Image (cartoon, rainbow, N blue to C red; front, side):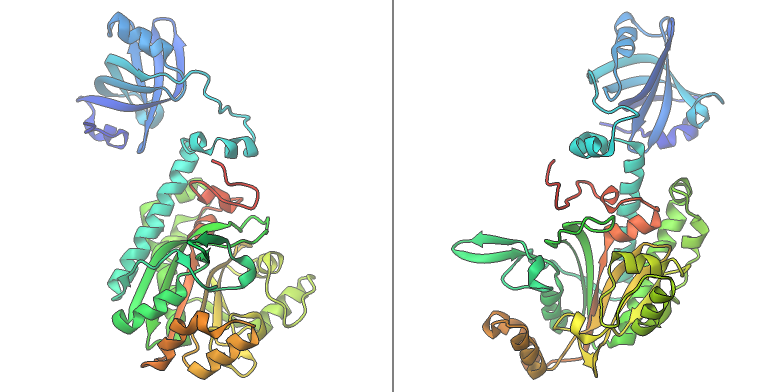
Length: 426
């Protein structure tokens, strides 16, 4: 059983350790072979001298290709020339499984890497992205737990649309048509009448043929719903959540943030006091920057990119025209009581949120106006018939958040196995 990880090597100088990992790099100087090994925590140099290991051990080091799995035993020693300033001077070296002709080279192209994503995941860059993503999710759970939320587990198979019907993935379900979930929102709303404040982490699916750097057909969705919560309350929860995630990642992964070109202190010290602008102000800013957009249009990729370049920190865009927002949003005059949280520096929307309509008759009227069959939504309407309360909620796209935090060129880099309109393999 593995009991030593590379990250702990500096604390074990002078001690014997057993390295279990994979060959990251290798070079040979006659009777001395340097193997740089990696595991989930880092890399370390292994020094394999012919006179210090048996014949089989030296042959194993000689024959170990890039990404071969190995087990080595030796003593940790300081060496300023080695990566991290320490190395393991081996007295044993064994090849567990070979890796002949590993297909990834320094010049392997992006599409080719996506074709062999199952192997490309081994890169140290991807490893660091996934560690950051894991910390993002853990920090979100910590925030929700500290603020009295309960995690729930809504279904992925749905009978009705949560968002626009044009972005649904239909499937056959025992003679009926079902859909992959676009959002857990509708079912989370049902849970608030028991638990009051709830959240979920689920995959969401959108059949959008968008080929931008921020769109996926499947993404990780953290969604929250709160009873007795209005628009202002909703925004406070959202900015508190995002600031808490940033603080945690800034403290835990300063080295990764800086390696990806970010200032760790910017995230570590972020406060939950995000600027608010109106939809009208957003339209004015976008037009002033030379990108024509008419009032009443939704903000797409290009519009959000231009808008967010004007801001240093995340900010809310509030109160969109009701015609371009979903039926379930509360309305005030000709506006939806909603706010999108935008990441700065061109990255765009990371959260969509709103106060939900709590009036039964108004929801019926909107569904009929959109051509929906009321019986399909009867269970959802029942929530307004039996003890309805003011309530609000939001959805945060994890990959979009990670993309912004690590300055990733494309959102697919924030996924283990990205799903786009042109990619379902591997």
